[in-house]
Picture 1 (tube, rainbow, N blue to C red):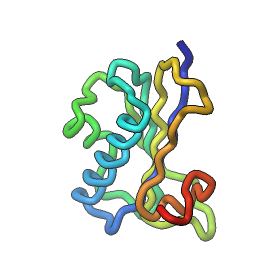
Picture 2 (cartoon, rainbow, N blue to C red; picture 1 turned 180 degrees about the vertical axis):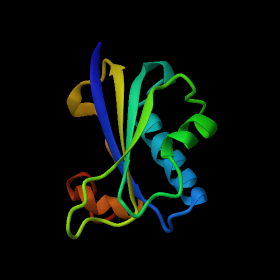
Picture 3 (cartoon, one colour; picture 1 turned 180 degrees about the horizontal axis):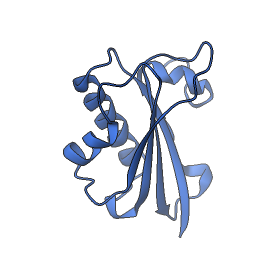
Length: 124
């Protein structure tokens, strides 16, 4: 079994607790579902947010809404870069898995699809 990182990102409509909750749950569920991950296989999750997202902690909602009570999680601020995507929430889910690196499905939702155009066709 290998330890693999699964990346994902999404955007929020506003810097509110409800938006952070909705975006976090949607993103993490998509990562877990797309890669057929069991909670016990998650080593840890790192969340990052842009400087304009500060209404709450994404990890809080992974615990409350997804039952990740025993999953170690941390939240950080993204490095501030000129022209960066606003209201962006990113996740790095580190898992123990037999999935080969090339089969990992990274998940970029909402406006964050623009960050990884290589993963999406123009029809999506």
